[in-house]
Image 1 (cartoon, one colour):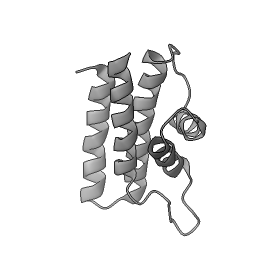
Image 2: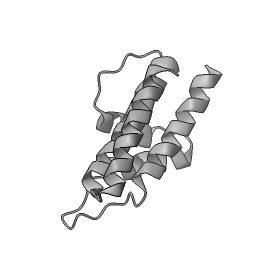
Image 3: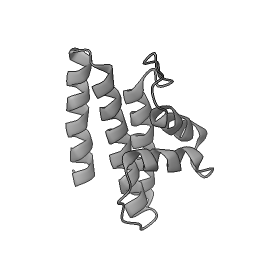
Image 4: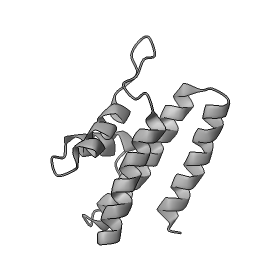
Length: 112
């Protein structure tokens, strides 16, 4: 298993813990990290660019990229959006959104 996939698995374990001991903030943070790790790998392998950007920058870039499928852009958009003052978020399933991005990246990396 590649290093980026190991990092995602480790972050998934943190997300599972955040879900067990209900902590929505940690769950959203883990989801953003998972998506960011995958998007950094996409940038490295598919685009040939070493990444130094934050995960939020990568999510924003993904959300605005018309070359990405709609479901991937939508997932990135939900994950990048800040929670409201009432702690509401458009990401009702942040781990599901992260998994959409990871699946896209895995497919793109395999084709490269």
